[in-house]
Every structure is written in C-alpha cells, then in structure tokens.
Image 1 (cartoon, one colour):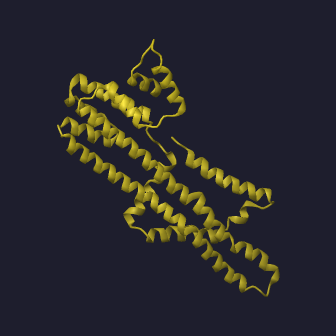
Image 2 (tube, rainbow, N blue to C red):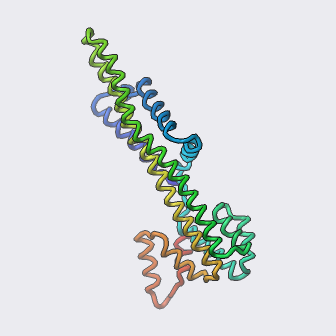
Image 3 (cartoon, rainbow, N blue to C red):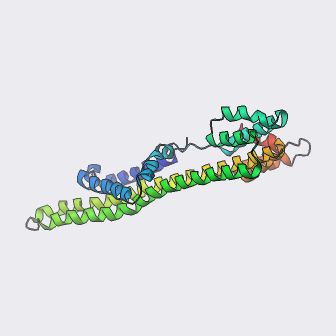
Amino acid sequence: MDIALILGIVGAFGALVAMLTLEGQNVTAILLPAPMIMVLGATIAVSFASSTIPDVLRAFRTIPAAFKGKTVKPADAIETLVGIAEKARREGLLSLESDAAEASDPFLKVALQNVADGADEEELRTVLDDQIALHERAGKAAAKWFKTAGGYAPTIGIIGTVVSLTHVLSNLSSPDKLGPLIASAFIATLWGLVSANFIWLPLGDRIDRLTDIEIERMQLVVEAVLAIQAGAGPHLLAERLRAMTPQTPKREARAKDRTGDDDDPQSGAELELQDAA
C-alpha cells in the first residue's frame, strides 16, 4: 500500500492549520458551512454536468484504489512470469491452463488462457493490446474528471465570494459588521483554491500515475507471455523483462557487482529472484 496521497493531503491541510495557528487565528474561522457547501457541492455538480453518468461512477469507484495506491512491484511480476516460463518449458504450453485458472490478475489470466488455447502471436497481441487500451481509456477518463473538478473549483469559489459580497453591500449602514462579513465572504474563494489544489488535482494526478504504472505492468505481461509462447528460456526472459523495468541505483549497483564477479557468475534470472526476495 502506497500512502503518498494520504500523507500529502494530510500534510497540506496540516500546513494550512499551522499557518492559521501561527497567525493567531482559530481553525473554525474557515469552517463555515455556507461557503463550503457552495464550493464543494457546486464543483461536484458542474463536473457531473460536464461528463456522463458512467464516467462519474467510474471516477468515484477509483477513489479507494487511489488512496490505497496498491501496485505490483516489477520484481514480483518478473518472478511470477519467470516461474511460468520455467513451467512452460518443462511441461509445455498446455500446462499454463492451470496457471490461468489460479491467476488472481484478470489480465494475466486471459493471456495465459489464450496461450493454452493455442492462439497465434498476432491474435494474442491484438487481444491483449485492446485490453490495455481499454484500461488506459478508463483510467485517463477518471483522472480527467477530477482534474476538471480542480479547474472549476477556484472559479466557483469566486462566485461564492461575489454572492457573499452582495450581502456585505446590503449592510453598509452597519460599519461594525463589515469586517467580519468581508472576511466570511472570502472564505468561499479560499475553499475553492484549497479544494482544487489539496483534493481534486492531486487525486486526478494520482489516478493518472497509477494508470500509467498499471499499463507498464500489463505491457510487461504481454511481452513475457509472447516470449513464453515463442519458447524463450527463463534466464533470457528475466534479462529482457528486467531491461524493461526501471531500477533503483541500489539495484543497479548490486546487479553490476554480481555480473562483474568472474569467480561467481550469476544468471539474470537469479539476480532478479534475489532482488525480489
């Protein structure tokens, strides 16, 4: 679980609270129901109006996944795929049908089942690429919805401020009330900016990034399954998949040290399995 989104949002609101406290303000001064309802409610409403109902439902369904940020590590994916390649070499491609039945990943399940059913390379790539494209479109549409909300929120905050200022102008005969009324009027603008930059835009960017990570993993599966279908060896497959995934400097240094040791040579698959462990 990647809690970056949670830490980021909590940290942003924490900085806002710290600023208010250091300036001697009470946090409740910005927690006014009227401007908050106006900004948050109208932002969701106009974002709803700018899209379709399926897109809105899909966007809200991505929120739990965005907060969890659960992704498969490349090393873990490579370990699984290399294990499948080893089994296919020992027992044949038909044996992958049992792996397809046991796979928890729907995409890998479809890929392995097609290999076991004897689909040719071109047909298999087409099927898998179509699924990747569908997943990418869905993820990008969800991310776009939240980014759109982030674009509307500041303007809606200004609208709320203008509405409040009309109430201020109606009380010009009471100078002692003007200060608090003007301060309250600008709370709507504050919440428009805060909701856009603390909630909507980070959420949209997070979903966008998680979609990219998932697409990279799916592409890794495609290349691995096609290589297994073509009869590639597990060691060669591990080297190829590792070359397709980003490595941290620490992992790169470890791999270089190991491969540079002539007294104890290790295959790419062994290196990858050790990194995964």
